[in-house]
Amino acid sequence: MVKTENNSLLNKKATGRKVTRVWDSTTTTEGEGFLVHRSFPTRSVLDVDPFMLLDEMGPMDLASGEAKGAPDHPHRGFETVTYLLDGQFEHRESQGHSGKLSAGDVQWMTAGAGVIHSEMPEKEFARGGGRLHGFQLWVNLPKSDKMIKPRYQDIKSDKIPIAESADGRVKVKVIAGESLGKRAVIDTRTPIIYLHFTLQPGSSVVQPVPQNFNAFAYIVGGEGLFGADEKRAQREQVVLFGNDGNEIAISVPDEAASPLDVLIIAGVPLNEPVARYGPFVMNTEEEIQQAIDDYRTGRMGKIEF
Ligand code: FE
Image (tube, rainbow, N blue to C red):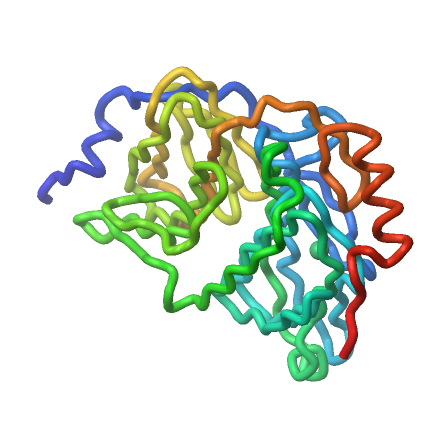
């Protein structure tokens, strides 16, 4: 068998960043009570600056009429990124924007100064039932961007670049940043990398991540070896990398029973004070109080259809 650059890594010591911590996501409910696996915030990990939250919704197999969502609620001061793998969601908000999200689609919503929105299962999907599976990531905005005008980037699955290794055994969907020669179509306010990798057993990849970026991995399926120290982690676990190098190594043992499905998320830390309360992420308690007042008095608008 011809040895490719990709699997030669398995035969020598992996390079790049070491893993500083591995933890289990916690199971909780959101919105009207749908199940999520929460990477953070947890009791011991509040955030991974600039990321404030990562939830995996499901996967769950819903009977007819069983699908639940998140009815009208506000956001201010950060971005919510929804990436759906299965099912259909419908989104409506106070500035009049609405849209549907299907399997593979991404919505990058910059809440900025404030939106009130609902994130609900699409009506036909809810009626018929089916599998619901996706992710929501919260990206904090720098102080200078917290009160900007809201913006939506609704990206259909077929517009999200997919790259693969020379041997075809590593595939990556490039949601933000760059990987295996393909660059994302989504723009971000601060430099962000958001990649969804699938690695076949016996394959490996080295992803460049500048040293000043904080980086973590969330394992969606299977298991893999992470970082220079080849720490093992599996489905529903979170891997935090140190800032001790400018690349991240991931590999899957030959004997693995299934491919590794993993999100790699990284960004430049803001290093600013954080005041958070429910759906608001600001810098000070006064700004949180202001957000609550603005929401209560209708200054963030309301959904009218
Ligand atoms: Fe929301």
